[in-house]
Image (cartoon, rainbow, N blue to C red; front, side):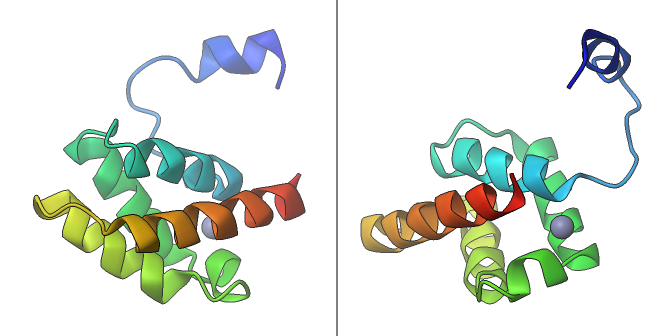
Length: 96
Ligand SMILES: [Zn+2]
């Protein structure tokens, strides 16, 4: 990513399609409990529109369920969290 791109995407109103890799990376933050409701909603929205990027890794259903729970108030079980973190790290490597 160039400096121009960073500057251009820093402002508000960036409502275009969320990048697949960005979404997966943000899921890390999400799993660490660092994402607010807005970012949760963004990831949810992306998965609604673009389940195909997760589907091939059999992640979408599990992840959607996890996000749904965690966007409420329930914390993800540690075992599930670890499984998903591992899968996501493999997926992100594939994208890169
Ligand atoms: Zn995607």
